[in-house]
Image (cartoon, rainbow, N blue to C red):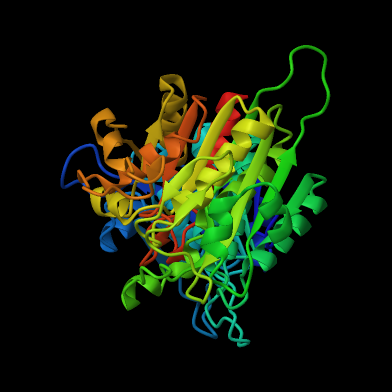
Length: 518
């Protein structure tokens, strides 16, 4: 699905019996510390710390205190032990052991804290060969999974398009999770799958728009889907026109690089009994957004290569579902267009006829995402017979203003489905906040010349809400979830498992939703 991940493996055993600690390629040993029960007592040793202290003949608790560690999740100190002076008559007790010890804060041991600890470890051990960790010894399976996910997510480095190699140190070549009592491998399988999906979404989203036009992204989707054995169809301009995709065609009409619609389908293995539930995921795929004739300000336009993050997440989700052998039918719809300026750009005041015949008055050409999503949602309802409909999009600046960069705005027409998404968010750490579909705001989308306006004539406020209400008109009354990821899809810096730039937010969340719906 994506580039090769760093290797994370599980191993049974404990530090005193760990025969490969004397191997030359083991660069570091990782032990856990946690906050003291009472203030002022300093960080407290956790899993493996006592064994490591006995092996090295060093008081690691005292060492953590000297480095100012309090044991909070993500606290870390790397201790390089000295070599004996040449000619010394006696060697140190750690002469045959790795000379680097990582003291790693694991907080309260919750999945959230272990995910942060794993992320901190990835950044503090970059450039090493093999790292042996006992920080998750005794942790439950979901804690081991969270730790591994955090490590793999923070180990991501974006591909460079300048032609020069990335000079930053690569993550450790192998992380070994050592536990004397349990096998970590079953927990690592979903962690790797979630990380692969996120890496793929990040890679696609971070690709420059000079490379990433609708045709390029459609070809990447075809290549990835075909390699996974999935059915894939790509509709070009002629097919889009013949089937009435007026929104996608209008938005992409101002660009010399025409639009596409990609359909990727995972069909589960045939089994006796009821037909599997069908989940359709629609992802907004604007490969670059100038705002069209309603031109964006310069600063707002700069990050718009990421305006197809929803399509990248939807593609990653269907590929991840196939990798997991999901019993659900899962279809990803990727409406792809470049919202550009040109002689054939659509205009404010135009009336578009979208898929299915609904007419829409264009009031703002920079509210293009809802137009391409509306086409795809209507196509899903009329042609694909879904049981559950999900869309994910960097849709509105209002969502980012209201919720910041840490939460996606969640809208839903089905309470059970909303609770499923919220449960998935709690498990993955990809946070959502339930927003209301305010009935009184719907009248603001009325038009004098069409069935709907794409933005209100007299905005009631709540721009993310009115955008969601617009999309709801095309969902056919089906159980539907809308995720506005305009805030968390992009990050201005590294923080825990989130990386600077394209974050891939939503890929892990949707994979967890699919697991919970199975």
